[in-house]
Structures are given as structure tokens and as C-alpha cells.
Length: 374
Image (cartoon, rainbow, N blue to C red; front, side, top):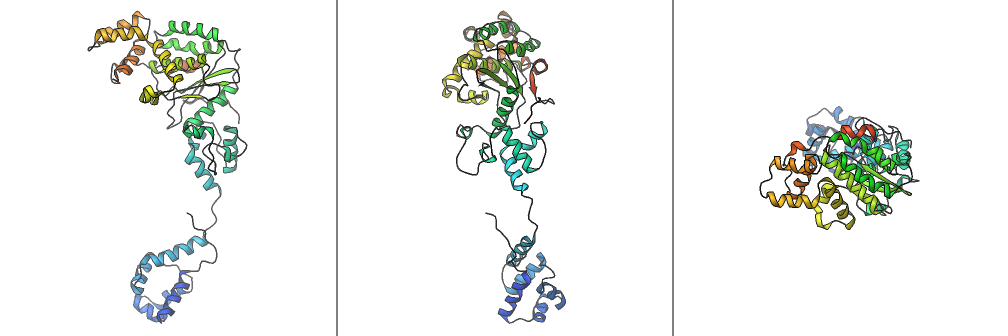
């Protein structure tokens, strides 16, 4: 707990004189004991000079008390005379402790400014009327719905960036029929990485707002599905620049849209965490995972393949299986790695894909800033 200092705190020399009077010591006596000129002692007694650490130790020996006694007197006096700190220090500390504010400024999400303007920008960013309503910033014990769901602040900031960007996107009326047909069409693009460039346009034509936002540090997030009124929004972080991760996350979020998930509460997906939780996942996530896995590599066919080839899964066989179903080998390898829990398996097939997707997508990150006004 912080100590509040005021002008009633006296110079250590005042208390030193009281101690001398209590013990019947004159100034010349104490100067003799300390081995210093009496004039040097008088500057302390008169409040013209403070007590140094060396002097505190000498006084401690002279009065048979811990040296900390005198150092604490000096510290209390110094703090009482210190200038009142900028009130923005505590506010900025609170902001930075809860959110990566400096990273958000670096990314262009908010502008560098004084603490008052920073608070206002965070209010606008999180769409609240005062700073106490910003999740994880309230003084009171009450929690926001995001805190009750235990969504980390870094994930929450990422989510709200997706929301802000999505608000400015215009798309046709959402059509479930078109989306189901688009899933079938997307399968024709799974054989080579560069074909992923078609995804943003195809989703937009179905009436889906598609946004890619680079994740913040410590924001373990892959994707999100929510609805902007009657329009579905899919946000992706592309934190793993791999062909298997991109298509799996995309199909996972598409399934959330098809199931109508995310209308009440956003479906935030950390697929690494989901893999660790496995069977304990909510029904919505199990359904989305199954659809994504089957999309990347036909699940029943892959199961038969693994049983038939057990225990040796040779690279040439995996490549042949992938070609048979018009998949890039990286998609099949990604599913095999998950099924066998072997994440060192044939990693060279997990090719990069971000370079093909970002140019055609509404993107925030990797040096690009989506135009959003707070």
C-alpha cells in the first residue's frame, strides 16, 4: 500500500537532536563519537544536509540501533519533498498492465498521446462510455461478460480490432445456399497454395465479412466467428503461416457460420487449446473441427489409409493419397500429425501461404494498417 507523505514529516536532523537530548549528548560529544568535525554534524542537525548511507551506519553504531532507522527517516523526508508525479503515470501503468498499449500504438490501432486522450481512445476502441467500463480496467469487482468468459485481454483487443474493421466492410446479403456451394468450389483450390488468393472474394460474394488481423503478442488466437446484425464475420490471425492451418481454420469458422454460431457470443478459437482439451470441447467446436478436418483430408478415407499403412507412413504414400483427392500434401500431413500426435512429421510439406492470401484480403498487420477511425 502506498504511503502518503505531507509537510509534517520533519528533517532527520530534528529527530537526531531529540535522540541526543534524550541521551544527554552535546553536539561536540556526538561529533567526537562519529569522528567528524562538529560543523559537519551541525549541517545535519540544522536540516541543511541529509543523512548519507555512510552516516546512517555510523549513527547506528553510535546509538546502537539499526542503520535502517536513520535511512528510513531520510527516505520519508525526501519523499515528502518530492514533486507530485504526473497523474498519467499510474493511468498508463494500469493500461499497459492490462493491454499491450505500446504494441497497439505501434500497429496504428490507437495514437500515441497523453493519458487522457489514451483513455478516450480505449473507450472508443472498446465502445464504452467511460474507462471503468473497459474490460479488465474497472476499479470495482464487477466483471464484464468477456472477463466472465475468461477471454485474455490480448485476445479481446484483437477481437475488437476485427469488429472495428468489419463495421466498415460492405457485402451483399448473406446467403447460406451460396456459402454451401462455395465450400464445394473451394475444394478445387486445395491442391496448390496460390489458389488461396480466391478466398476473400468468394466469401464476400456469399455475404461474409472476411478480415485478417495479425495477432498481438501473447494473443493465442486463430480465428473468430460473430455476426454484425444479420451479416456473418470471419476473422483470422494467420498466426501460423502454413497451408494446413489456413484451410483448417477457415473451414472451421465457415462451419460456425453455417451452424449460426456466434450470434449471441463471439466464437473465439484457439485451436492449439482446443487440441489439448479434445473431448471436453463444446458441441459447436466439435462440429466445426470435424467439418474442417474432413475438408482438409476426407476423414473416412484418411482413417482407412492410416489403418492400412500402419505403422509405416511413407512420404510417397502420403503424396499419392493427397493427389488422389486433389489436396496439397501439406493438408494431409497436417491431419496425420494431429491424429498421430506427431508434430515433427513431414514438416517440409507445410508450405507458407500468407503471401497469397493477404493481397486480396482486408488485412491489418505485417506492416499494413486497415483504415479505421476511432
